[in-house]
Image (cartoon, rainbow, N blue to C red; front, side):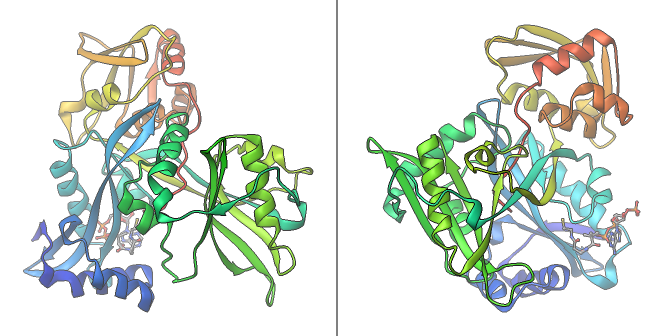
Length: 390
Ligand SMILES: CC(C)(COP(=O)(O)OP(=O)(O)OC[C@H]1O[C@@H](n2cnc3c(N)ncnc32)[C@H](O)[C@@H]1OP(=O)(O)O)[C@@H](O)C(=O)NCCC(=O)NCCS
């Protein structure tokens, strides 16, 4: 018998042991979890009275269509090796989603394995793409000077970050705590370097990076960028030239960016390699609430009727009429649907990851030609990406 409950302080060592067996966490990582276990975010699964599984629910928001949509990110999902393959993970995910649905419209996660999450209703929501270039291909000089990015700058940088994030899809809203724990801290305990640039007194870009060993090299370095945001050409060139100052001992730079990163256009040649992609998953917990929570292109005026197949939450099924205008959507109960799809498929459409016609091709959606066209108009937009890991 599997039961799920909130973790207590007494569970901390067991939770750390489960995560360590699942993710091979090093001593520094274990120490950080002991010092700051965030017990309120942790759930445990008991099998016959002893803790055999754990998961963590982290509150934040994703920017979609210019608005921050409240979300819970799931991480640290781990089941003791001897208890795997017996339904503990599945039960834990379903119970957790039932708990979260009244609180937030969406949930997201990075899947180490997909089937368990797909069966809980997650579809793909976006990408975390890393780009890679040789340091000697970067501009050697930039038009601005970079200065140290101190904790006193965080509020101002965060304002610039939110303006930037509002213009794309997927990026995560960062609290002061998120900046410290997920942008400035390193699980491997490397030194984190950070610089910013200003134009006319305003922050227009910043870089946060660590140094690691370059692939296949005995001692040459890779500039391992955690965060690189630039809003003007001068800021982009200056931050690239700062990374290039590592070229005497360094070989390459990797950075997280959108799937087609215009930063590449500021490099003279086209030396980019894809440095790895991790697709993240998204669960529309409350479908009407999720549709009303994100933003839409200002000039689009359209309506479409939809239905959702969602065995876990039949309340999501509809049919619903979506009316979009002035950058917002309203959702009403409807009589029939012109587009019917799986909740996983609607996640990819909602997030602007897949076009509706591609979701038809993968078998997740049936729709009239007009409904397809309308869905592509409403949910068209930049491909969703995330720079942060959680
Ligand atoms: C992934 C994990 C949490 C699944 O928990 P579980 O209790 O074994 O899962 P369930 O028994 O409910 O099975 C759910 C699905 O998980 C998959 N699964 C089960 N055992 C698995 C294993 N040992 N390895 C990988 N996937 C497994 C199967 O696809 C299964 O679906 P199916 O039975 O329809 O084929 C567990 O295997 C684990 O802790 N793995 C290591 C850590 C990890 O990968 N966590 C996910 C981080 S995002």
